[in-house]
Length: 79
Image (tube, rainbow, N blue to C red):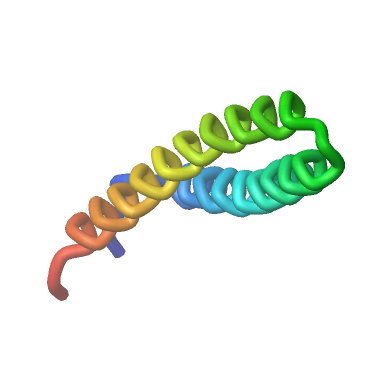
């Protein structure tokens, strides 16, 4: 049995963050769109900026997750 380079706990945290950020992005973008339709342009711009920041965090998290899974796959080796 080989020891994996990236622990299951790290992978679980990265997956959890990706799921939470996905839901948060959806809520922020929809709320910003609703505010825009109600005539609150400033609120929409603020939420668009928040969504942009959350989107950047989501992309960084997904890249880290893919790299961690790749490292684990390389660390398993052929039996």
